[in-house]
Length: 132
Image (cartoon, rainbow, N blue to C red; front, top):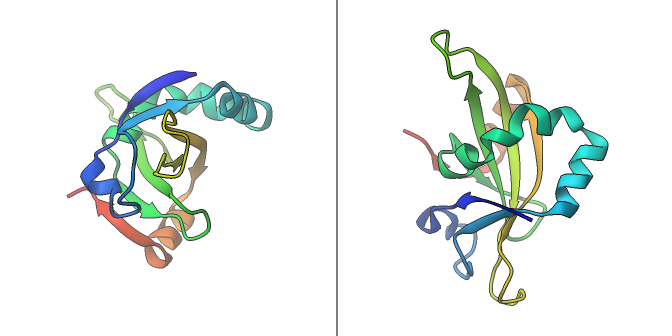
């Protein structure tokens, strides 16, 4: 298990009022899940997980899974060119009342997305936060 960072509870309470903690983890099980199916995701984006969690571009409430947030971020290369590395959707399961009291918010997966898919999410989803 790896500690990733902290969410802003004021924002995420728009998904659930009963969030147990602001801490976010990345479990070994989920790391293995991503590594087996899409190892390039971890190679390219894992080092940005804290930035994605703590400084998202926008956040949607997941329409399918309860107590789950879809966090979107465009990642820029940290050099003078400031090139775009890619845009991702990081799926975060929130630890809420009724869960084990020791649970933490945890990363389910991270998915690279293109402009069309990103625009579709924005158009059809319930945006709970947008970076100004």
